[in-house]
Amino acid sequence: MSVTIYHNPRCGKSRDTLALLRGRGIEPAIVEYLSTPPDAKRLKQLLKLLGLGPRELMRKGEAAYKEKKLADPKLDDAALIAAMVANPILIERPIVVVKDAKGERAALGRPPENVLKIL
View 1 (spheres, rainbow, N blue to C red):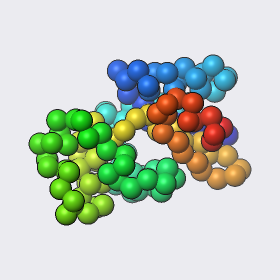
View 2 (cartoon, rainbow, N blue to C red):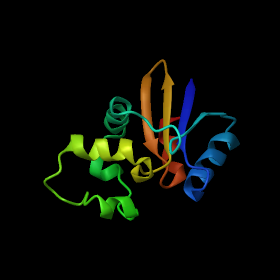
View 3 (spheres, rainbow, N blue to C red):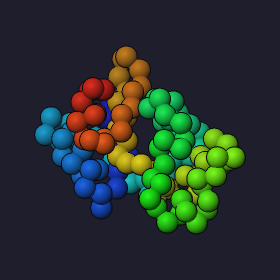
View 4 (cartoon, one colour):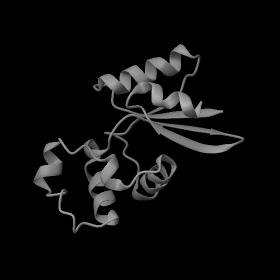
């Protein structure tokens, strides 16, 4: 089994989720997504694994969300995904991805205990 966390070390929920994984003996691959954001293809895969639409994975309180007028309901999924790729601070965190013989699964660590369902 491989585990990856899309992590922001400045985020309490992200740190708590990482601590939860480590507390269970899991040392995940850490992707600091602000400096290494997922590309559009991977972001689409993550959305599918999470069962979310792009808007549901966006941090609506971020300045970039307001500045780029991303609340506009006319924006399609491709535009929202492009905005998240260009401004990774907009991506809700942390995202944990598990890959094993059963396939690939993902969960949003809000709250951190959400990731337990995919382990």
